Image 1 (cartoon, rainbow, N blue to C red):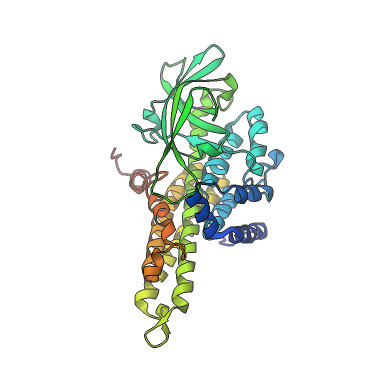
Image 2: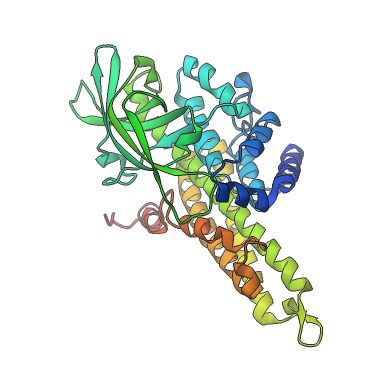
Length: 387
């Protein structure tokens, strides 16, 4: 057992940290407030190879795994730039394509995902079903050589930045007559695909959308994989990387908040010239938050290691635990940072209150803390299913 990164992983962490700090949280906030995207940061991260660290080398990637991508997510967030589309495009879409796409699909999409010139977003959540794929209302039916999709999706990130959306739909299995999940690569400019921006109380340069699919026609090769049998494994292939990288982003955000607060409390002096950080009422909450963030980081490392070793079932448990721990730790760290900074904590200048909405959302999405507790109760503690 080792807790050390490899020399290559250490170099990656240092390089991504340096990139993130060149842009910083003020860049992130400015882009969000002006309604722009982090185009420059994304493009540079792509040119440097950071967006494709988990993509096989034969498709232009770095040949690493989710461990390396989690490092990228964490370090950019620790620099104040938590990029949600890292989770959606490199983590979910690239992993699904790498594992279950056809060779033609991999050749067509993975090089662009690796260098940042292409983004693919992910659409599973629906207004009535949430992310419960057993109850999805979006349906795909065959019409000659084509597929025709109808349905609605909600809380779909970054559709306005992407060339394709990976849509989870249900299709009829001709052998059983039962509906089964399938994934489709749908161009975002496809006829019949429309979107409506959701106004969110989260300061982010990445937008959320409602999607409407009204007789969206796509060719046969839009179906991900060689057959409908690829649907369920492909869907699950994207869930563990999603959990792990969201957790990494949360841990990085927590580190950022604690660092900002610690710098302030170590130098802010009142009451006889002592720093406010010398008072336990200030330092202990920060120390407690730092412990929680570090514990989450350890679970993230375990989950990523298990996933990259191909131990999917164990990675599922650890990935969910990591997501839960990081969501709680990030929310605690940001809230604590705001509190110890006092009035300064609520200003844009000090750059912590700007993250309150994002870390609160991290306890809800992409899977709520309650559903993770259900999962742990059932699969770890052996309890009956409660829903």
